[in-house]
Image 1 (spheres, rainbow, N blue to C red):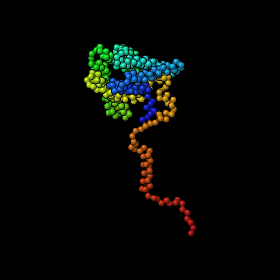
Image 2: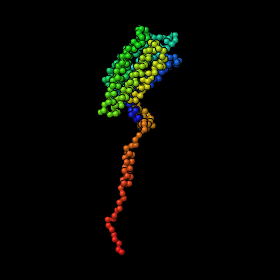
Image 3: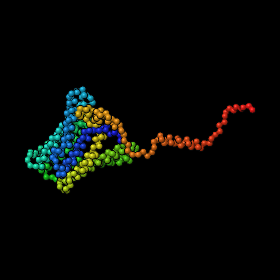
Image 4: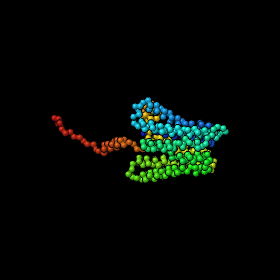
Length: 347
């Protein structure tokens, strides 16, 4: 394992999102089960840490952009700054939605307080759809990966169904409410099936290198490890909401933990994020190494697992040479060397 290659395409933004979600999900499950008696405001703190980092990163990037106009022409400075503005606007809407959901859940705990209609609570989430669609079009034009924006734009119908169900405007069971999610999950299952079939065909192809075969196999296993736990979580959640069983939320969320644990390592294998966050204007790992030069010696370490069964080739050749030399000395008889010139001495 080469640490230099591992951190070369590290994406700190995705790593932060996955870690915050991994902390938030167990807290939410414990709070819904009643095992954790804390306020919902404390439960949502990991998500707000994510939003706070986004806002701080956009603020410092704007300050550097305003105070140093000469930096704007470096690389894709204008495109990076527009991407930061789009991401900040989307995260602001998500933050407003989280605040309203948290307030709604707190009001359901006890009497009093201001309780809103669930359609009003979901209004910031509804507004993310047009913003996300415009961001996806812009990202496709400028070759930018916008996974969060794509998720918000695709699931707009699901958000509407959930809001209507929570407000009791529709009396469907939760299995019917999650129909948009079932459709997306079926599409993902088809993609996983394609990956599996393709990897099997690649493994049987004799004209490909072993590294290419392993890469396709890893892609198939990774896709399978993402989709299967996610589908299991959706099925368990629907059964729990429809009260078909009394499974605790901690057990319901367990497959989602597996999905997040699989997603965290993927943040090391993707292309790095926007270099203008916090105004650093360079790769995150490069910035950390410049700030802490003592870490550079650890970035050039290569770790290899397993034992060496055969000795190196040069050692084998040396041993063969020595063995042949000894055999030649033993097999060849000694010869008497006669002088070329004889000097006869007088009597």
